[in-house]
Length: 288
Image 1 (cartoon, one colour):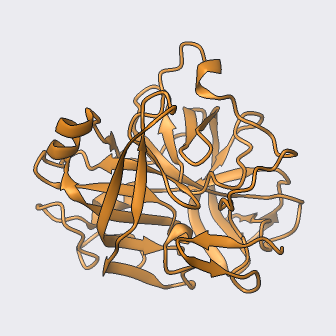
Image 2 (cartoon, rainbow, N blue to C red):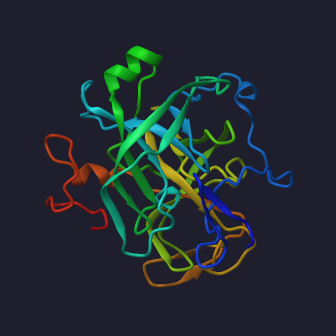
């Protein structure tokens, strides 16, 4: 594809790092299916509270179940939204300095409440999962006091099939509504492989460019059960923009139009008693 990915002031030309995942480029695709805007979702329990927009992606202001008010806040997005570009298979970014900014939205998505600023990339990868977790320069208590916003909580367990979910895009200020269709043993896209991927039911969650990094929010508990990252656009087999499903026996299935997200509960197995990342911790399943 000849689309370009805008990462701050850096432009990555198409090629080996072409748009393999639904990043935004600032251009609206009139042919893409639209999710309803928030006012159209009467009685919706999930809104834009704690949702952020990046320059090219979506994201969310999040916490662990054990996070304390004086802990520095965190933002979750995709690993492929990392400001250093796409991460190679097996590559991780851990505890790196960052000056990334995030626009924190009002609950109805109509306004920017604040600009949140990162100080570190806690963890980012495109292997097994597709997630990036940033540490902010303000605590949860400070953000609550200044902007009246509580963070969304990362779920400690993976979702089950049939559970109601919402994909909340801060980039497009749109909410997609569907259910967890299934958990896929492996999802393969070009050189990247993801494990236990979340496939969305259809219709309802046909995500588009700019939805990368959107939290997958459980419609009832409002916990973040995953992070939106890719979809099969044209029916291709395991290629850029066309991920394929691989079962435990190696059999490949292609589902044209299917959209997917990746697991985030694995973070819990890799944090210590002080809520700090420890990839050497017994039981940690994140890529090291």
